[in-house]
Length: 287
Image 1 (cartoon, rainbow, N blue to C red):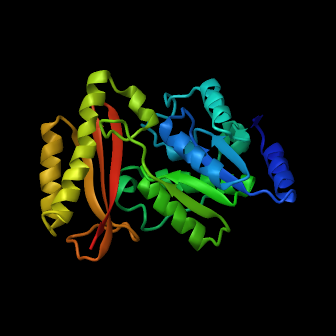
Image 2 (cartoon, rainbow, N blue to C red):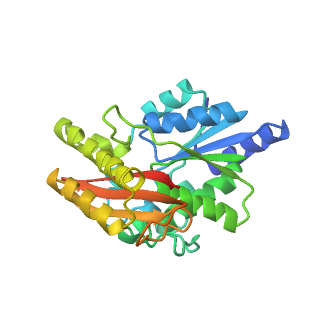
């Protein structure tokens, strides 16, 4: 495995691979890799001749009071895991390499309309603009045939799918299912902030989503207000501070006042456990 730190070398490596007729898969990450990231890499390894992992904590997608400066980082461990999982190139640019202007200023962004109005986008203004801008840069640097994103960050996945479609990018976006601990807790780099007791309690997030799924599919509840009320009551009783619990249309990410089958929906939540913000979702086909 080769570790690449600059854009020019990354481009040259990919160009050489493509000259040889090889397909390239990209797994964009912010590092501090866990089993969820490894599932992305393993899927990419099966489907491509060459696998590139980017490891870059992108300052553009963090708000002023968020955890950019303390976001967990462990490059040596990340490199070891990438090597063990058959990655060909690990791209680890600095902030200065990605944003070379004075004070890392960025003057041109890729913007997002409508798709960031609900779910996490409502509470993290500018977050998805930062995400799609850096992903566009990575796509331009690596020129992958396929790129791999986890379904845990479902709004990010949907926005990137629409971006690729709207901007005519010749890249296939491959969704990879959420990886969970045995308790059901979705894997996240931010889980490292949790104590053992909090980690156990955090399993209730997934339970609340399963509860919502059961209300919709098994009990036939069609009022989203009823589903939300039941599930937020449960989460509050478990000691969570709820930022949102929403049911949205899969395609448009618009809030649903009621469910009208046949419909593909996303049930998603963001909660705080102490100071730690955790997100999770389920995609449900209502027939």
